[in-house]
Length: 258
Image 1: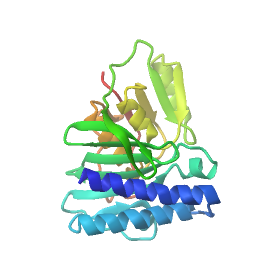
Image 2 (image 1 turned 30 degrees about the horizontal axis):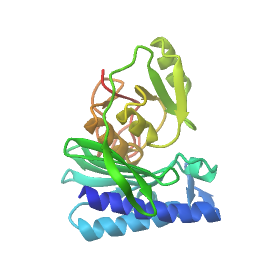
Image 3 (image 1 turned 60 degrees about the vertical axis):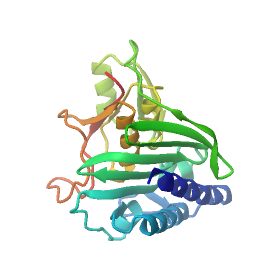
């Protein structure tokens, strides 16, 4: 399965780069978030690949859900797809945008692929192994490298959202004496934790499950965790939430080894 997800993410990423070079057409959804022709083209590629390879597994994809197409996920096993995470990064010509494909089983992310096409970096995880590779000319170049979270440093490095930081996030860091932090876009924050390059990522602003599933799978496989503010593992497949929309995440703290 993982090889199919990796190949699909790479092909979708190439389609994104083609539009990135030509200049995307941007429109804004009802929630004021941007969407581009690259989002739609990449999602079309991924959905076709998943339907061909795994016809029995439902797919919850960001743009399809925005259009009102939500599959039945009662079986507990489904894919979450964000074809272009970090659309603002993409529009602003920042390289921190990603293609995300995550597999959910019984509410937990068990496999995931995150591809940063402008950086040429591919992360993936399943079956207890997290890894990273460089992508060149549409394929993995050289060998895969195993990755893992580091023990929290004496002087922790935190990651924050480039576009969606909040006063609650800054307060959380200040309360814990964490003064070193970097703003990073998209699901790369999870991957940097998984790679052992940072220690904690508190998120006290809105995210959706397709934003986090793939990166969260990689982080958990690499030895980290993603917890709600109540200390419970972030769950997936959240429907009929009384205080929020389907598939919306609560605030969370992602971190490496403690």
